Length: 102
Image (tube, rainbow, N blue to C red; front, side, top):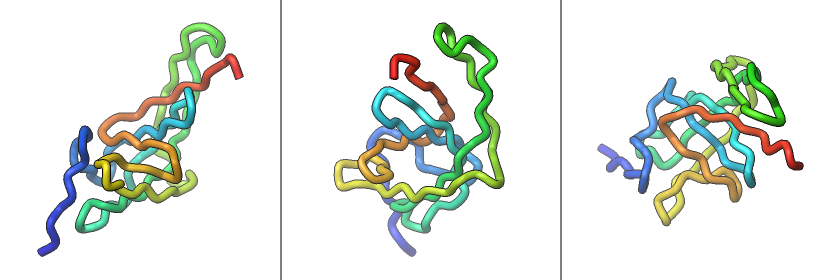
């Protein structure tokens, strides 16, 4: 049996669980679609996001899984954080935010 890796701050990822990728001051919502046996590699799929609030004021994003969304691979780093390239991925919740100042 393979020993499971333990993320530093996140719950152990499970298929169907939400995930959030942070890119600069923006955040993007994902759904976990695959987890390796060791837990060191996680595939995440981009969610459908709809802003029901004011883009320049209070953003209120509704996030739902998207079976057609792009899939990215997050890997658990030696520091205990999941990364896609240089972007952090947090497991256990979906959050979407687009910084209107850019």
